[in-house]
Length: 116
Length: 112
Image (cartoon, rainbow over all chains, first blue to last red; front, side, top):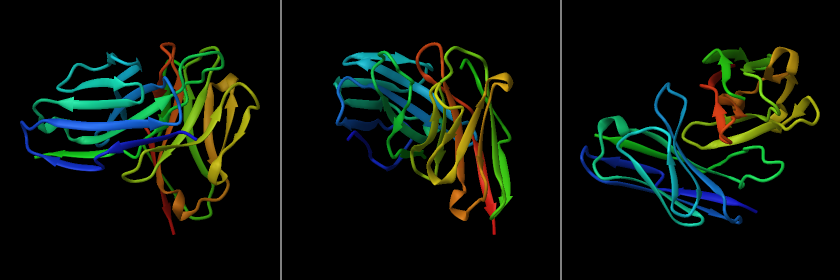
């Protein structure tokens, strides 16, 4: 069966410090991978998605970047955090687009980032 | 779906009462629609999905949703609320770009 893990679960960082959140998927190959952010009262915001190694699409210009160094690994990074980067970050995967693709997403446990 | 609208950011019901969370989508062919639940500080968990089969879809924890094309709706219901149903619920639909489009979420509170 497929599983998705992200870490760390909780992170408190000072403004201006770097960030690295990691996400890995097991039990599937060539998944689509996603990073979402939830800020208080603002629903789910899609930040990045990837359809393959080294292929990253950014939905919102911001202080963050994403990388996919391996097929089942997705990393969210920042060189210098801002206060506005605080939020709950969710990694997700979906099956590759084929016949009968529905777009169903499978989410990780989430990472709570607080920038002080 | 090109857009998904959830009516009501907060819904409060008494324990044992009917739960009704509303979701409307903009039309697309074919519509693939989902309801997810999120408990505090956790990821989203799939409750149920509509993928062009039966219009009444049953999910986990006693929830169900009915796809009504004429009303472009996919409302989530549960006959009798339980305290453990308190969570945030998200409706989502497949967009034209191949990504899921989410509603803004509805927080369900259950009063004893």
